[in-house]
Length: 324
Image (tube, rainbow, N blue to C red):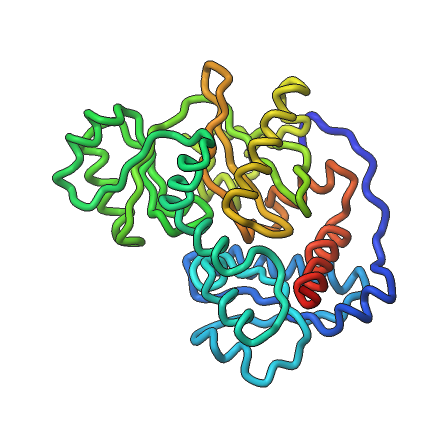
């Protein structure tokens, strides 16, 4: 990681009394969404960290009907490492809630809302938080009107996919039509958004506090799926490159976004900055990646929090849920 020379966090062991209270933990991973491979990598990393910290944990590759996950469960709580539809969109959260099984992360409503980029933006707008201009696209015939209204370049994305899957940058009505077709194959709800030219940042939130912001840069056209999970030349800046005052402003904006959506315990907020220094909210992730390329562990490390402590702290909040 460039721009950073830090002492490695010391080996972390969870308090034995906490381990006893946590009981047996199932790490849900895999799933059937387009993000299955990323989820498997996240889940394996989470499981390894929990075991290293002394927690009694095991993995569950969730396939097929999610209702089966709560039939005769042999676990006390769930660490959700399922990305995308089913695991991140409120479906699994609703099932676990109904079964009375504590789980990590945001509850049903916030999970469903954050997974839907369009409706998240409605909330941002309604609460006075800055987000790029946008509109939905329901047919190819709308391309000329959208280009005239929003101007190019534009971002086209399936509203309910994660990991930048299906996102394209377009510069003309013809490109918009092509990008719409590709996005519509993944989701009937297609979001077209004003493209913000400038640096990209991501801010992780842990238990109500913003972790150090990360500046992102890539030789790709934007921070796409390959740049996130496959490329070795993506650049992560910690410190993020902003002045201390601007980083605090960025962190406050991320926490505000987290709170207005109603998220819980942990998540990650993606933000752009334009040429005038204005920050713009893109989206909010309630089950961010936890792979070796992932940003939440990177931000935690910069704050002196080891991966093992991070996953235990996320899991520890499920005890408050059980006692609520």
